Amino acid sequence: MAHIIKTKAFVLRTRPFKESSLFAVMFTRKNGKVDVLAKGCRRPKSKLCGTLEVFNLDEIIYYKRETKDVYTLSDATVIDDFEKIRSNVRTVNSAMVLCEFFTKTLPSEEQNEEAYTLLRTFLNTLREIDHTFAKPLTLYYLLRALSGAGVQPHLDSCVTCRRAINSNTKKIDFSVAAGGIVCERDFDDTVVYLDRETVNTLHQIYKKTDVDLRKMRFDEIEEILPDYLYHHLNNTVLHSLKHL
Image 1 (cartoon, rainbow, N blue to C red):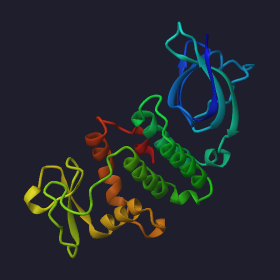
Image 2 (image 1 turned 120 degrees about the vertical axis):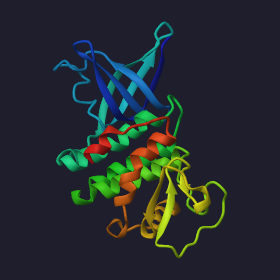
Image 3 (image 1 turned 60 degrees about the horizontal axis):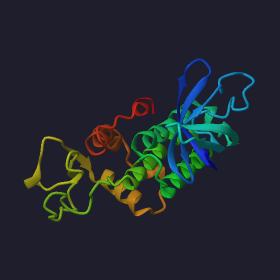
Image 4 (image 1 turned 135 degrees about the horizontal axis):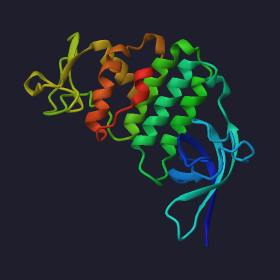
């Protein structure tokens, strides 16, 4: 007996399987991240043709038989293809960053309404803004996603000894390996110097206050993010960040 599931889902990633099929990583509303096999979807006359473009929002039906280890996609209907995002290479690259992040960090088949809503809000915002703000918007939402993954940077005191940090200094020591700001006693080889405005930007993001991307400092954040992800998310590398 097959267990049939119908739900909304974002397409996070696809890869070819044989001549005419695809494996797809779907982020479902009900059951979190699932891997499905879309048989024959690359054939021009397939009812699934065109439905599995990355970051599409689809309504899907999938099932798994008791004798099989993989889910099979039986139907998909595009709810939103985010056409405006696809019209500009900057916004396409931006959308890919969050899709890659959730592909690599979400556990399989665990419902995560917070992450699902974050991705939906990000894509809805991305298609409405001027494409020149695509990079800061993406970094903003990627930092929010770090919080959901349980690896938000510690900013209120020394991450190691919890001593207060002098708030009047222009440069603040930030340990990538330790995951937050540090005092001079807990200096390590991964410490970088962040401008006070950069740390203020991080505070604004994690306090979820109204933000003005034009006034936020992302240059230093962009430099440390790849190492931060690698240290705190099981050696995760986001290749799409290189093209942001």
